[in-house]
Length: 68
Image (tube, rainbow, N blue to C red):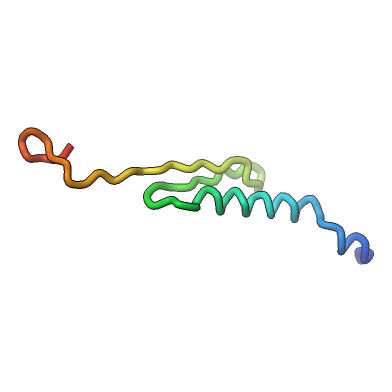
């Protein structure tokens, strides 16, 4: 079954969702130096994007010369 020109020209719901997902991914990884981005998938679809930032602390010493 072929699609009409109107169907091909109109953005589908999937392409809109793909664009939104791309935007979410770029926002999640933007500026991330240390950490992780986790995608939660249910029934073959991404339903959640989690971002965890980590901060590296260097040059600090404890009372006995050890790290934090």
